[in-house]
Amino acid sequence: MNPSVFGPALAAEWLKLRSTRGPWIVLAAAQLIVVGGVSGLVVSDPGKLGQAATQTQAVAHVGLVSALTLVFGILAVAGEYRHKTVTDTYLSAPRRGVPVVAKLGVYSLVGALTGVVAGGVALGAVAVWWPAKGVTFDFGSGGVWTTLLGGVVADTLFAAIGVGLGALVPNLPGAIAVAFGWMAIVEGIVGQLIGSSAARWLPFTAGRAAALAVGAGSKDLLPRWGGGALLAGYAAVFAAVAVATTLKRDVT
Image 1 (tube, rainbow, N blue to C red):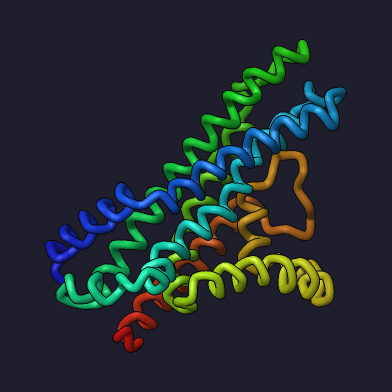
Image 2: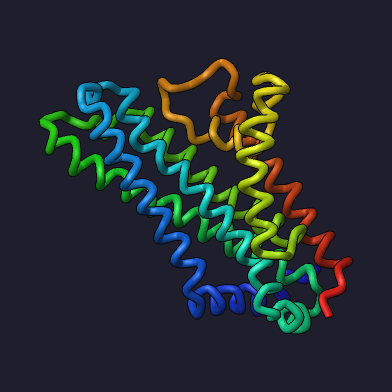
């Protein structure tokens, strides 16, 4: 496929993002999760603010944003089916796969930027809370920065997974229900039944491993790099599914 055909598709995706409010409301709400999470940690356990584990746990809230970047990715495709703009989107490109690949690129990038912003918000929150409590936050800690990086990786990859899920389940409420149903039922309940050694290979558990606070690890989870690598594999599978599903589906 000629790379030059992606230029108009990428420009179209950026235009859609700039002209719609829904995705930005989702991503703005993500920052409230970070502020609320850091604040809740401080209020609930102020006596441990000087501990390294607590400080990395504070910035690990960046990883929670991945739940909303997942929804953000779902909106990329399922949202077009809901608003009946998907036919025009596919007709504007020489091949159906072009808009899908463009969505994967643009929404993954915005997912990454959302994670970076969430990281800045987390650092800003701790910069306010810790001095207010008379405690020094160790901004030079490697654990803080690797935890932030793991959170950004999770936010990015779940945005890509969301695009794939939105293509697979083009009904917007249905796709969101599938995503959170999987999180709550399959990984929350079935994961306990099959055992932690098997559950750690599931996508949300892999994302948890990638974004987990240093010092709060579990022998039942993959190491951070393993969780990130597995999540990247899931994102690649969902990307392939997004393209394959789109090529075969009748959208008229």
